[in-house]
Image (tube, rainbow, N blue to C red; front, side):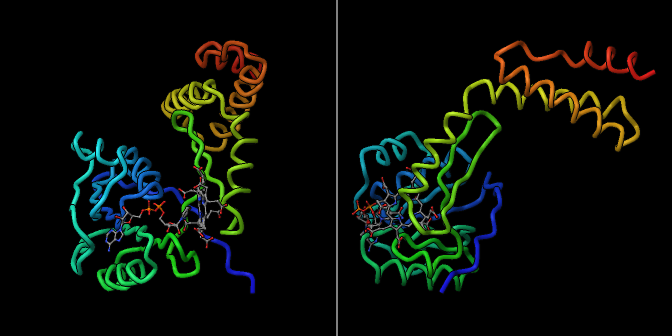
Amino acid sequence: MTRMPYYPMMLTLAGRRCVIVGGGNVAARKIRYLIASGAEVTVVSPTLTPELRRLVQEGNVVHLEREYACGDTEGALLVFALTDCAGVNERVAADARRDGALVNLTHAPELSDFANPGVLQQGAVQVAVSTGGASPTLTRLLMHKLSILMDEGLAELAEHLLQARHEAQSSFIDAKARHQVLRQYADQCWHAHELGEPLPVWSTWIQDFNSSHR
Ligand SMILES: C[C@@]1(CC(=O)O)C2=NC(=C\c3[nH]c(c(CCC(=O)O)c3CC(=O)O)Cc3[nH]c(c(CC(=O)O)c3CCC(=O)O)/C=C3\N/C(=C\2)[C@@H](CCC(=O)O)[C@]3(C)CC(=O)O)/[C@H]1CCC(=O)O
Ligand SMILES: NC(=O)c1ccc[n+]([C@@H]2O[C@H](COP(=O)([O-])OP(=O)(O)OC[C@H]3O[C@@H](n4cnc5c(N)ncnc54)[C@H](O)[C@@H]3O)[C@@H](O)[C@H]2O)c1
């Protein structure tokens, strides 16, 4: 039976409590992204990888150095059950759901409330890849292909376009006209980005645009 497709979204996690049960490599990979998103991370596990131990020492993660106990997931928005024991993961999931959290079980995508995509990032630009649980290896291959598009200039391009949007918002009252102009400007910036040329400066570009449309 084919499963329903995932609902894709980008979550704001700053200040939100996220609980990870298990302290192996899979946990380390998830925790890296959670910290980068500003989440308040607690990991419950008798053992930790060296990377996780360092993150705890640096004060980025709270560590409960013991096996999971009922109540650990209280107040969490997201709970990751990432131990190597299916029975423990399922107990964590049942408790967490009772507390209203969304749960990810490492061994059982079909029992999870969400899945973790592969992620590529350059500045504000993030690309998330999923194969609907079919093959994490295919995800990795796709990420490799996409990484060719994700050079450092993309971060600069996004920042540049954000500034232009701010300036356009304060100078164009008509939203439709603003969208049209910004789309043309973004096309030209993209073209320059692909050719490795300097990005057009908004103030000069908009002057030229206005005089040629008079
Ligand atoms: C993208 C990435 C993100 C991340 O996890 O952070 C990710 N898996 C990654 C790596 C990876 N995973 C596995 C291997 C070993 C090789 C292999 O088997 O291919 C490797 C390679 C490695 O670890 O190096 C094995 C594996 N994975 C899952 C199962 C269970 C099952 O399928 O039943 C098993 C069998 C476990 C076992 O039997 O032991 C399940 C899931 N893995 C997902 C994501 C979600 C679906 C993503 C999608 O739809 O494409 C989902 C559903 C989990 C979820 O709910 O989120 C990350 C790669 C990106 C990166 O490298 O950064
Ligand atoms: N979803 C994925 O992408 C993916 C990829 C590889 C492996 N896996 C699966 O994920 C599982 C975890 O992978 P790993 O490499 O991190 O494994 P691991 O064995 O390195 O880590 C398991 C962790 O769980 C902890 N743990 C065990 N029992 C616990 C309990 N009762 N309470 C709290 N913590 C407990 C251990 O101390 C350890 O830190 C594997 O069993 C594997 O099946 C999933």
